[in-house]
Image (cartoon, rainbow, N blue to C red; front, side, top):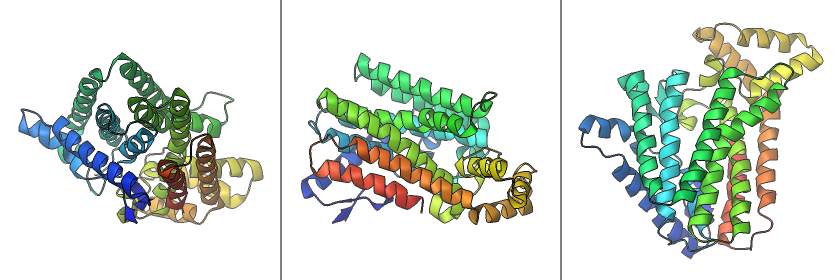
Length: 336
């Protein structure tokens, strides 16, 4: 049994394992090639996060989805490069918005070169992704454009917050569907579509990616509170320090409003204080780690992962389907 892909996903089918490994290796080559520039500094900045590694979750999903058609079809690897470049570009921008110092265990681009370089490098990656996408046909361009619109809309909704009368948790799930679910859905869709899979299979894998993407981000929310920097590759409590209301915090606030417990209200007040203060930040992290809201966020993660698993039922039994099911389990395990 060889371990491939994110979270130590194991593939028990040797032929599938070989296809996935070869596909991911080709994606790595494609990422390096796509981030080269005639200007050495641009190459250095653009390859900063590529060379830092990462889970390559989206390319892995492209490779597995392609198994339901012709996994060697010429559009499979380029489409995986497109989704990963798009994802990487958003990380450069996210780190500027979050003022993050660490990404994937290395200094973030904004910490190393400043916000302007980080933003422009993200734009450079978007441009390179678009260049590759143009060769995949107008339908692929349209799908990516729609997903990118959803991604940006999700980010704007997160920044704006819920409108009056809207349940904050429902609002947040909409945010995640756009910010994370949209691009992971495209990963499943591109893999199936580029391989020539049946349209019903394309639809199933698109729905699967959407739900798995939300579960994936919810697991990240849990990790932001529960993990140390070695495990997550970034500074714990980054979202907390920036006042970004991730699911554990939203579950805490919902519980405080519903039950009115003094300790919940006190913790909400601490979260509303200046968490750029290291002592307050450490106290908030410690209290949240021990709070039932974190367990509720874990249960929410499990629920979305189970919904993703349920969408796979119509697919034929095969090694790729088993691997997609195991991805659901891996996301849940990641959340603890």
